Image (cartoon, rainbow, N blue to C red; front, top):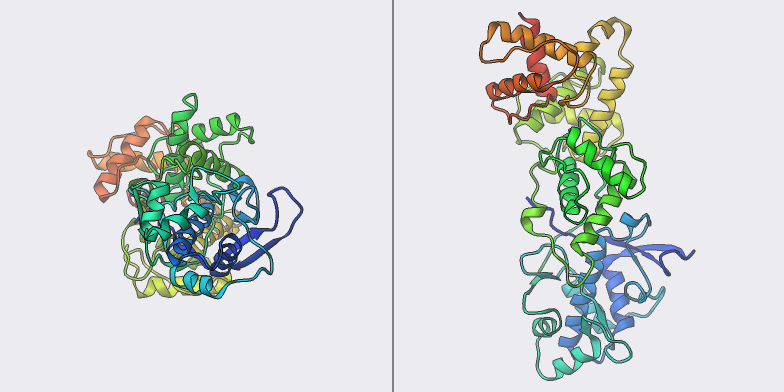
Length: 446
């Protein structure tokens, strides 16, 4: 599923220019649009003109939120209150009754360019004292008086290749940053997002290294991140923390012109998710098995967690274990593995590895190291991986043999891919918890 825009429940407005000392105010999104419309428009205008302008105001605000225009530049708000940058918001300003009714009826409708999913950056100006490339507010009045319907007014100013999205879902506005730094060995949708954005940025900055689009934070991705950080004067550590995440997003949005009327646009294909946003009861697959692996390991040391088996199905036992983990971690107890629960599982797993009781430390090298092992890695975990692969290859001629060098080389990756094919997994050549468990189990049994 693509990451489609939602109508936010609230919006945070900075009451001045971006760098001013003015305060922020967080208000319901509908209240914000009512205020803007009442201070930008005249309530006596024809209803079709009012509707066209409100569509533009909603789309403009949603574009700012969806692209994280201000957060990606280091600000702690969604939009400003000034027409110098955005659209006017007057703290305590009057709201006209007819405009309030219109907004209640259309607050979750917005404009898109055909083939794109982001809300259109629907620039507008009054058309009398100021002129712009977008909608003319007074011009819309003239068109409405000529019998133009709202959609026709919008087409007149934004082109014939626009659509209106109706009844978009309302939901919490969640920051795109995944909540924890991404680094070598990470895997999933957030890594893929960074890879996609870096590949698009590279079209404008061809000297940047190219990552692989494989959802795996491998050596190529690390080098691409490091190159980006060097070009844009960030700490060049190859890790995507919050500042690097939002700088990538800001530059990506800039090269695609997502916050301009002539945007390159974001297509459904570009926004398509490869991995589900959440895991819940009834789901199945590698993601569920990974959650079960973490829960089973943590449950061995934490009495509050019930024991479970790795079935690959999000069944009753898995849901009960998720409930228990969320309760013990102070999370919302909903039985769903979303971003917060996933981050907490990884955090607690890594913490337990660091603080493993003394009687278990002799087995530390046989325990999944808490991140994907990828080509180029070194260390005791790689030694253990190669040792077990060598044992397996001695009994199974479909698995190529490897040398125990402590360096994850091309031969090791080839052997891992063979193991993944046996397991019916995507042959990435990287070792996550499922493949690690299989290799350790089979190798130790020989």
